[in-house]
Image 1: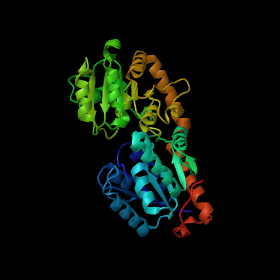
Image 2: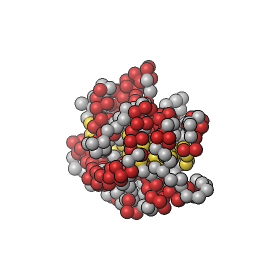
Image 3: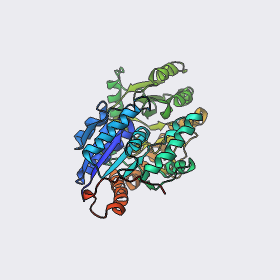
Image 4: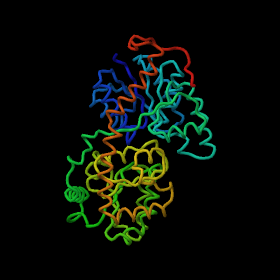
Length: 397
């Protein structure tokens, strides 16, 4: 039966936005009425409209602050006006505002996309864990993208009903057959960056992601310093933008060979960079299951990851993540990978096969829809589209 599903998201960019758009596209194609509450600014609203979802402007900033009560009231009003059968909250800010607004009055799925308490330490981490334990009382399913993310929630004391739907990618879109050859991709990259002549020879490492503390580009730059000397001609490209860009550029300027690092800025379509790269590296400090490595591997590009949630679950059994926040370990892994182009090619081919087997976005959409059904059917039977809004508080178990 068709459902009316309300997704709520803040942030409106990066991997979270891409996951949301994939779900919207799949659910619209399945015949559901799909709504999205999100800030009008940013790429998410336009992308959601393009795939057939109805966008409900919701003014909300990324971090909790003085505007939270107004954000909660606005979201409560949207739910009352549109009466969804189920609300799917994405990331910590939407999870905070949404569960305060609903408090179990509507069947609610919360997907953290990495836990809020992983991003902070000390008293703030304790406060975040306390909130997540309370919020779980108003959550019908805690939906995780990796077993490691679920384990982190359990270890933090969250009690609720858990579900798992690993992130997936569009295997037709991220298809190495559709990409330019590496030499062509590097030439295109050189032209787009205004570099004279073709891209310099030598292995190319690429980091795609928001320039922020979570993604760990500062660790990558501290690791990178001696790499061009140990692997002649090695280059590093940082693709993306964000609040840490100025600090990262200043750090790159202190390296022995600053010219070996290029800041490419944001890219609407990262596939050209995956085609150009010998290795995609994501030195994150925390994740749920990062989307960039899945995209890169679907394009046949090997990846180097840190030991964050979801990393081991998307890598081959013979591949090892490196410790978080460890420049020395990251440096040695970079040197070993970039000095072995044949090994990189073989790892990329294995990665593509693994994505086809385990991370097709159509499977992800189907698993999420199955989670919705598991929430709704015990409450309303087989016709959830006729269900009233539930007015009793939800419970966790």
